[in-house]
Image (cartoon, rainbow, N blue to C red; front, side, top):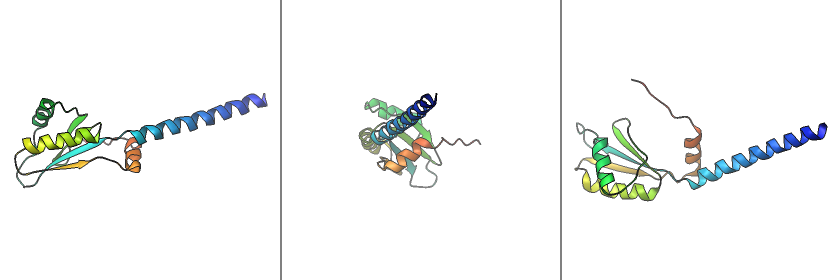
Length: 124
């Protein structure tokens, strides 16, 4: 009876260690990228998400999401290569007066924390 408990306890620890290793490996190999489009002048509005979607789609650039956030437009990509291609397209497509910032999220700690923390939702 005692050996069965010991075996179950050992298998549980082994499973937890394996799950942690798989989660860490997943975070290390997943490089999400984000573009942020902001206006450089007051009075200029953020570009429409449909406009951005249309231009990216016309050039065959896949993206995960387009989200308005604090007077900016955030575009998430699966890879830094997609983000770079999108930045080049948007620099040609958008009129003057916008800044396109690229975040490749190469920092392991930032990726781990962004995966672990819950998404925040704001109402109003």
